[in-house]
Image 1 (tube, rainbow, N blue to C red):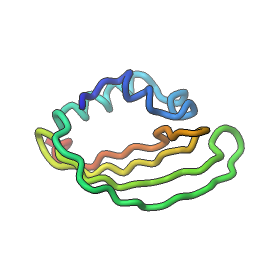
Image 2 (image 1 turned 60 degrees about the vertical axis):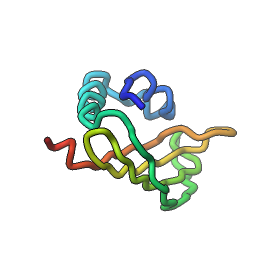
Image 3 (image 1 turned 120 degrees about the vertical axis):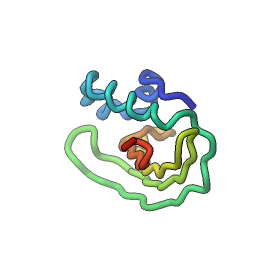
Image 4 (image 1 turned 90 degrees about the vertical axis):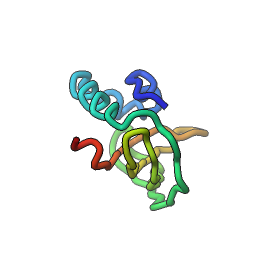
Length: 103
């Protein structure tokens, strides 16, 4: 796993990708590089599934998981919300929580 901005963007929902400020996104992804390469993904935990009716492209079915991970430079917990889009899912929210990012 690498922290490639274009690869990450390719997994995002169109509505999320369209709201990203390129400068802020670059800062965010550069901060993730402190984690190093992905070493291991532990067993994920299903959190919730929700169907939301919201105006615009935000309506849909959302599934949230918590994923313990190990990177070269430390452990992290990822909280990932996926949005159903046709016959597949795209990333709607991504949160990486690690003390390594504070170093």
